[in-house]
Length: 282
View (cartoon, rainbow, N blue to C red):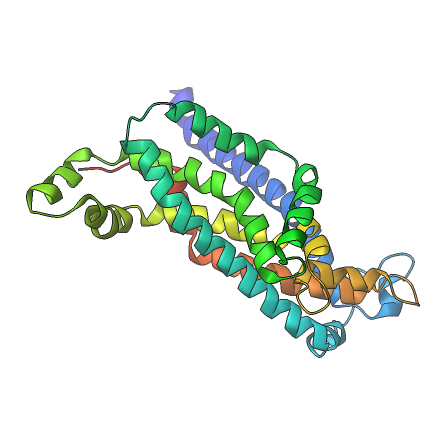
């Protein structure tokens, strides 16, 4: 009797503890982002105030300064072009390759798949110099296309790894039904398999976009002033005559992060479905 009376109270206590733990974890993960947002809304004097100000009247002067910079617009355009091109190229090459790994039992398939993943395991700095030398010989150095190829090199294994598991979980009966109706293998892949694999494609595209959008190393070496991306442009805020421009740096950081956050939230449902290996309930 006492256990029955106490059980609802115990459940409420357990629920309160769970929500409290989740709230603490959420605040811990969001604290760096909240701190950067706070710095971007302070004046230069407020940024260097001691002790730090926790209550102040926010200002948008840093965002206005960043958005009115000529190099910010060009860097944003370059980042959009390079990131979108890298994602599109990775999907166009990686999805058919993943389908081949999933459906064709050719000799050496496991070795080739492992060799492809080894490229993803390498640190980027290990291939940066050979890439720069190769692109210089081909006349592609300091061009957007060289950055796209560099990003694709590391995004492609990720796409193949995600999409291979997704294609393997798709029932072969879907393709066999299309073949009976007269569809070719290529037509089946384009019109049947890819629409069904949309969650996996979205998940792969988000991960590739984050890699290309946030990269600094390849963009810093393979671009010039006309083709630099946003992470490279942000480095200029730490090299001014008056020292580190924390307001401009944090404001540009928030503006750089915002598009990826919005896109990830919009595609969150597809991201969860894609990373769950595309299980189908029939």
